[in-house]
Length: 529
Figure 1 (spheres, one colour):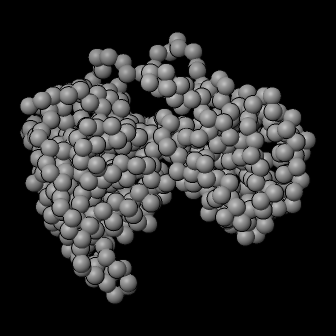
Figure 2: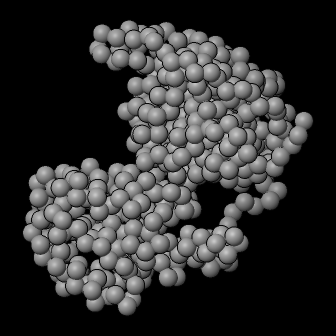
Figure 3: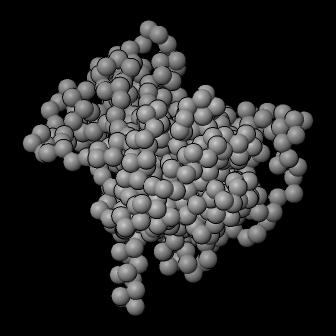
């Protein structure tokens, strides 16, 4: 077999293509972005015309993928863990409608919050929706599991969740490649189960509940769930996903262990291991999902250790050091950060237009002692740090506009929102409509750098449409202002900001200048041509 050196994300992408994928739907978010980017440039994907254009947000991605499944073809949805919050409505209901063509939802979790606002564990979503979950332990499994996940999806007529973490997504390993399967033919479903009127939904939900025994049977028989039953040892090990690698690095595979990479939990294997050990210790990256479940499975009198008992850190990602420590062995190599490295906090790029936006905002806002500037998700969030320290909040995608509106409703003045171009189309437009409907006294700054800058320069859904969108939502034409954020324009920018703050209603300012990173890339591409 051919071998390739692949990132975990690339292994997932290639596995999906080789499993007969017809479309990937995604919104860029670290650590999931490279999956869609790989498909966008893969020769076979291009030859087959596999859909790979970015979606406006994770909800639209999930719904479009469900539509492709309805038509009988295999679809992949990709997002980072917080994207699961955005697509949750469609995701949970897709388990009730069921699927036609295979549908796999890929959630890339970020323990330790390397580039995220929380450490939520997407396995909760899989359990909540009552669907199968795959969690690869290495890049080879990430590749192989795509075929298995699509096959299981079509067998059970359910979506399947695949959960990875940052370390797997962004590390490389050799992967054996198989021959690519053909795509499914067009075969639209004609059953009424897609219409979730209450009478139909009740029947569909009952079918979902009945499928749980089939899901458990599949997990028990899965080659990805392995029991190594060794007697005479006090402590047994439960290792989930990538944690299996850390355990093997610390003590090797020849220990009493259940490796778990497919859910629901293989209960028989866990009980069998528990029967020959006095206690179990659970290694899982993320939250203590399995640790809690095993406590319920084995009862209060059986000793289960892990994050909840303090044997492992309650927060942050696992690593070879803390796994080895929990197993009572010394790690051969320290995984920790060198102590003598100087702290290097992130900062906006030199020449970035966001810098000029914050410079102007700070200058004008200083004239108003009670001002607050509400921020949003993007590279411009760095405006919360020195030297600007402009932002009072950054909660979730789109929250800047709605928080500014709520603060204005409470009487705060001036109330200013800063949001990026991609974030605005992702989740900001509806908040702006709320503000327009109440003529809220807020000033919205859509800092437009013509790309999705924070995740590497992907296409932004609203490029060259923002004025039209704002006008369509009802913002008065004279209060949709466009500026070019450059030092030479500072007098004009500050004057416009001051005028719009003083306007008693909704105003939008759009500072527009291309991201420095994409500009440099475009210049190189032009030079190479």
